[in-house]
Image 1 (cartoon, rainbow, N blue to C red):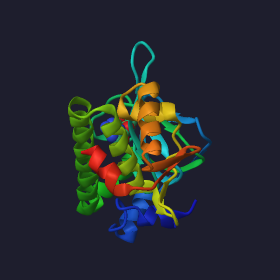
Image 2 (cartoon, rainbow, N blue to C red; image 1 turned 120 degrees about the vertical axis):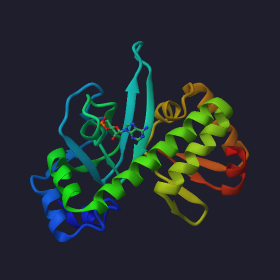
Image 3 (cartoon, rainbow, N blue to C red; image 1 turned 180 degrees about the horizontal axis):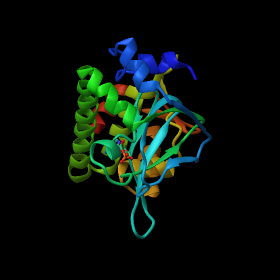
Length: 225
Ligand code: CMP
């Protein structure tokens, strides 16, 4: 395990060496290939996870089997902490969308680190507030924006977090299938395909396998508003 990646994660960057040692005592390493789940909605659990490399999707399934994605997380981000702060079963299913390495931390050790260093609580509260902000934005978009607008916004958000500049645009290797992208924006695959095809036809982006290249950031931004 590359412990340095963990040390640099925003949550742990300000920790004293002592508090970090408490937190990562009993750390477990979890390696997943695409499609493998860490836990399922409704499971009990006493660990939280920090993504060392790769990507994790958090999803919920409706009683009739439809899926909705709450978020796609990347390196340095954490999940699985809700079951600690508000003891209840897992609120979502966590599944790898690419080769992924996680560091599993015991809830009990996070509790001890919080007691040893108030900074940990502040970082956690910031992460939770950021997530609530993001969730509120998605909720408003579901009500106020059309599907192409939501697709544009989702791609911009993924570009912010996973984008890399290339010679002709921003390469966003989101690792999602079009079905998963549709689950992320809360629309059918057909409608999302249509929106993507329109963006391609306008020259705003290029589609690649589980990735897009954004060619016209400004137009895509305008379409997302
Ligand atoms: P937990 O309930 O332990 O397991 C599922 C995890 O998904 C949950 O903790 C959170 O870490 C994460 N999660 C739940 N809802 C969201 C959301 N709206 N955005 C990002 N992550 C979430």
